[in-house]
Amino acid sequence: MKVDENKTHGVAILGCGDMGRGHARAWNDRPDARVTAVFDVDTARAQALAADTGAEVHDSWQAAIEADGVDMVSVCTPICFHAEMAIHAARCGRHVLCEKAMALTLTDADAMIAAAAAASVKLAIAYQHRASPVHRTWQSLIRRNLLGGPLFIRMEDVRGIRPKTAMHRRGMNGGPVIDMAGHFFDLVRYYTGAEPMRVTAHGHCFGRSKPELSSFQDLAIDAAEILVEYSGGHVLS
Image (cartoon, rainbow, N blue to C red; front, side, top):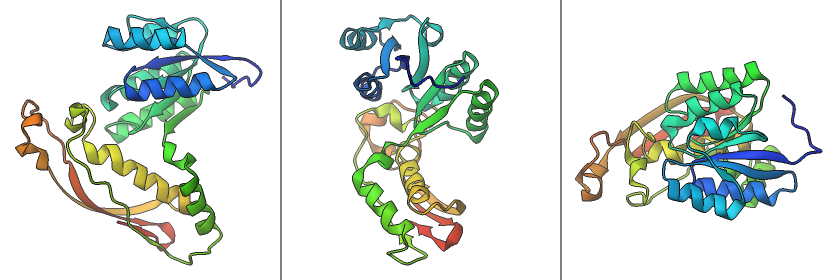
């Protein structure tokens, strides 16, 4: 299905938390899109977003995807649900904008890509840092070879327990490293046009001693030192 640039496209939002609300604002700020369907397991959150956007609340994510007039789907749920939602949306002929990380396994990510290709719909993963003026400036400097190279690039993200404590669950979101390091990997690709060739990593779970996370049995790695070697000799630490 091709995107018709001359019409207003209906959008379904799956997951009405912080990211879902952000997606909804961005879609409704566009002249060619309007949020028409929402779903969240927390009905109150879905109803609040529907009141803000004029969308209809649906009682299942499948119903929101399949609703009349929906052309695009924003998947803003925990990562463990991304694949099944994106695949179903593609099979229904809907374009998909999915929050990162794309999936918890390579098998699921490949299945999402295959479903979109089979249905001739667009699948995009939301790496929003690419839109930042500072990162666009870095890309311009690097692509013009004004910094020389190969480059050694170091990026850090240091913070405490995530406010969304479920982010620390291995089976739901993969953990803070999965959540944040993907931005770094993607930005180096964006800056340089190079692809990662080899990865070395060591990680630990410091959250095991935190009372806020004591109810979780599947805590994920939350601290890591990662070295990524890219084509062209670039290195990300």
